[in-house]
Image 1 (cartoon, rainbow, N blue to C red):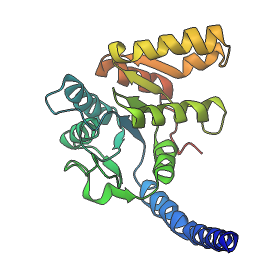
Image 2: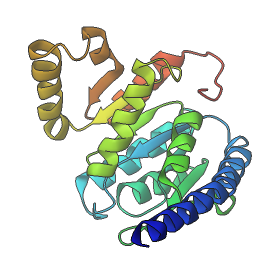
Image 3: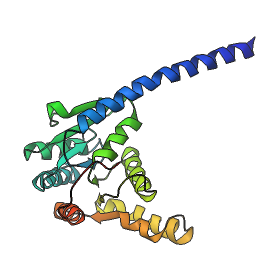
Length: 229
């Protein structure tokens, strides 16, 4: 009898999973239709916990303004902290300001600097991540936590495996990122040979807004921009 109950429950789960496909598909259609209209953008990532007086918040705001001045819009995760700083800089500079929100039990609420018609809500992390990767001409990664690292390493992996076109991945903050990059080089590359030397070329380490814009401009250099896959 117990085994029959398990089978029944398992079949119910499989049925629910099948119906979930339609909700997932709906989120993809919604995201593609909205994001396909926004034009070239750069995504800014970083901690939701960063306060508005923090130097990294102020730097993210400056970077965002310069990105807009260089002709791009700005995409963030739509929440507080570094995300808010990114949207704020874009908004104050008169540029496109996109927020890709996700429903979370803490930390996440949309910030007031997102364009009203570009404030998107998602239930699925994986759908939201596709939007970042597909519609970004670059990733600017400020100090952050697990979510920031997740976005960073997913982008590196997709570029490394040629699943998406290469775009600039720019880490901002030598003090914050140097230890991680040193470990990647010393351990992943030199000690274990789990990556190749050219994989290190996918990542740029900078400290200023001028360096961020210089890398973006050098990479594209007047070339036509389009979605990444």
